[in-house]
Image (cartoon, rainbow, N blue to C red; front, side, top):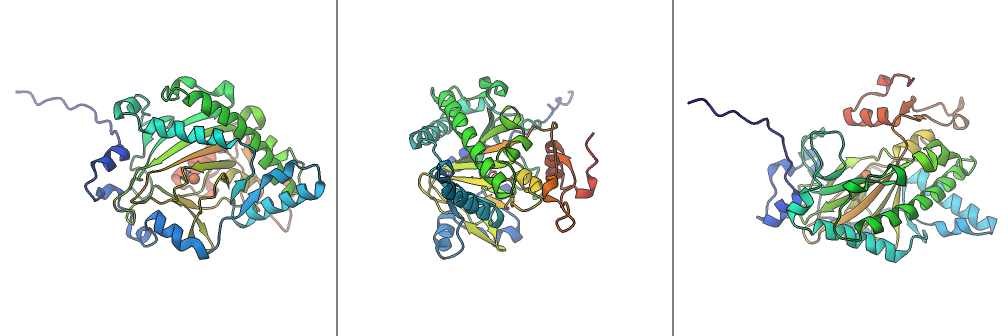
Length: 364
Ligand SMILES: O=C(O)CCC(=O)C(=O)O
Ligand SMILES: [Fe+2]
């Protein structure tokens, strides 16, 4: 008899949510992190308790930037500038996004992940493609060769004319409406934070906004991270250590701890600050500011008790249209350029393949 023809093997990653629901008390070896990394891991709730006494991610109030009183505006610029220089990440309060809208965003994302498996799989992305839009879980293609304890849903949410609504969840019924409202609100806040950061660099208010693509070309990509309960949180990570490539990233979550920042040579667990969102300075702004503002290394821990969900929105410049390099006003004999020019696409490739900085060719 002829041997059966083997089908080409397309590797579909296991959904962590399904794996976790089988609940046998241990995690598969693919999720067990390397020894050097495990020494600093733990249950996110324990780590959050321990973090009480140590350094804390700064909290900034950006409502003061809308004040007609110049003193208030300047104080706000100083506060954000300090946080961006020292940490590159901050909890933002009094941001102006209606809190009930944030609640509806959280409810919609949660409801999507609570759908039956087959309903979610209809949106599955192709793990072998570079387009990660849709429902997905990581394949073991990172430098560690290990997996992360999370599933995600990823899609573009702004600008409106570039969005493909057909790839967004149809259920729950208000997902699309709520997410569009959120995108519109967040885009306004992005402009405000870019203005504050520009002033902090001694530049005109509109400068960074323009440098990252402006209202037409700055892309807001949303990634809903779903971290199931993990029976062995001291062995796994939800998201491995990285810096964001974006200009800015916004994060809201369901008030379950997990985010850790690498600050002062140690991992610091972020507190859950009510009614706030987290803003990261990403690599793009670090480059434009010639390293003055920092894109901080961070990761996501998991825990035994509660599902954690976070909504990360990455504000990214267009892939090939803009050459990213330190702004000329910030480069001098005393402060030489720290970053060779690159497009956003080249920067992402560099991160993915850990190319050395010398490998950049001058973009045409
Ligand atoms: O879940 C979080 O708090 C952080 C997620 C994150 O860093 C990312 O998706 O880039
Ligand atoms: Fe991140």
